[in-house]
Structures are given as C-alpha cells and as structure tokens.
Image (tube, helix red, strand yellow):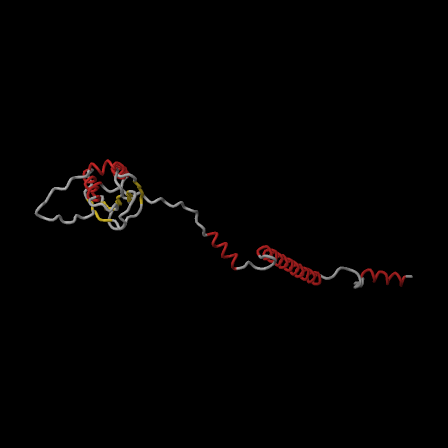
Length: 219
C-alpha cells in the first residue's frame, strides 16, 4: 500500500507528456495558414480571368453581326456618315447691272425683201436715243412677223421702250430674251409693217434724167 502511494506521488510529480491528444504545434499552424492564403489567391485570380473572358466575348458578340467582326464596308459607311456636312442652300447669282442706253448695241436684220426697211427702223431707234446700230439683210426675206431678241444685260425700261416702238410700226411683234451671237445686245428681225406706216413712209423718187439710177441696197 505504501509502495503504491509512492508510485502515485512520483507520477504526479513527474507526469509523462502525452502525444496522442492536443493541438498542432505552432509551426504546423503557420504552414497551414500560408497554404490557405495561396489557395484563395489562385481562386480569386481564376475568377477574375473568367470574368474578363466573359466580358470580352459579350463585347465581340455585340459588335459583330452573328458573332462576326464588322465588315470594312460598314466601317467606311460609318466614317462617311460622320464626315457629312449640313446642306447649304446655293446662293443665287447676282443679277448683272443693266448697261446704259448709249452703250446698247443693236443689230437690225431686214427680213421683208423690201429695200430700206432696216434703214427705216434704224432712224426710228436713233430718234429714241439709241446710237450703236448696225443693219444687214436677214438670210430669209419672207418673214411674216417682227422678232426682237434682248440679252440679259438690257434693262427692262429699254425693253419696254423698244417693244412699244416696234408695236407701233409692225403688224406682229414677238419679244424674247436670249443669248445673242456676236457683240450685240439687241437683235431685231423685221417683218411686214402696218399699212398706215408703210404708206406714210413712201416717198416719190426724184427724177435723174442724165444718169441711170444705181441699184439701192435692200437694207
């Protein structure tokens, strides 16, 4: 009995450590923490890479048509659309200033086949203040109306004045505005005069017994 008490007392004083129970040592716990952190880092990086891949795939799908990249034609059309400028209404060309009455050049063509018709009209226009007048025969000598052609440089006052003179003299008068060949501003092709005007302008020829009369021009 006494021997048993001595053994128990010795066991209490020098207990033997037990290796089958307890927590892992400090070194083992630290290694476990480091490995866990490494694992979580790999997991987070993997998730991040997957997310980037998904965003890239969605972006390419939305830009392409049916999963394909935009065609060069579509890109050029977009660039062309981006460079379009707003339409600007064309500025109307200014109307040229009408030339003065003294500078208007008139060409009178006799189209009646009767001598002196162009000269007669030239005198009427000179009485109205027109100075630069030339006369000639028209290619056709059977005109049935008088045609007056005015260029854009002739003012409306001169158009009205000359038209009034022609209407007082000739049976039928046609007035128009158009380009005129040569350096003329007005071209008048004469037709038949009114009967009253033709009779009033007829003059009896003066006799010349000694000389034979020379042929007069038809102008």
